Amino acid sequence: MKTLILVDIQKDYFPGGRMELVGALEASLAAQKLLSHFRLKHWPIIHVQHVAKKPEATFFLPKTVGVEIHDHVKPIASEIVVTKHFPNGFRETELLKKLETSHVESLVIAGMMTHMCIDATTRAAADLGFDCAVVHDACATRDLTFENTVVPARQVHGAFLAALASGYANVVSTETLLD
Image (cartoon, rainbow, N blue to C red; front, side, top):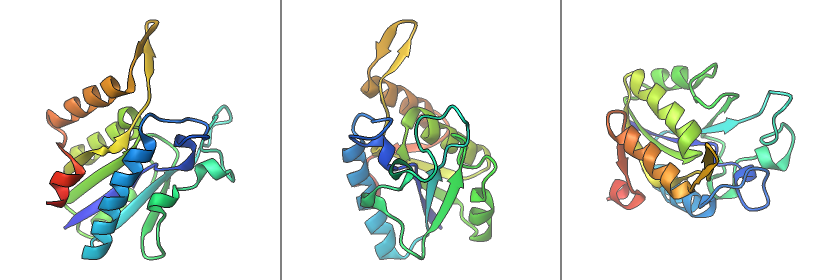
């Protein structure tokens, strides 16, 4: 059975948020299509929500608007929400237990940030034996800096997805997945 895992599609990543990503709006609309499809099929859906615990955190702060899941993919009562405090959605959460209880073997993963939480969660899922698909246009990231060189978000996104595609996940578009 396939389960949709929507990772950290939260308001702080959108325009006006504390950690705006490149392409967050477009990625959330693609994730919304996935969510609608899974709801229509009555397939399992799990939302993963990051809540900052570290005192030095600057975004996803508890009890702020920015920590909320974005309206485009807002969970409904029947959907599971797993709270996490680390990039890896499995670390110190109930995610694995929820998947094992439902006898899930295949995950469709989308969300934010490609280079951090999508990468960490996908690698952990694959290492735990799940068959993973990452929906590239339903993910977003940001520019990074390495040794005084700015690496544009598009390149960060592509590099991390290429790495995931070489052994951890099938990387596909929303359109391909829904066909």
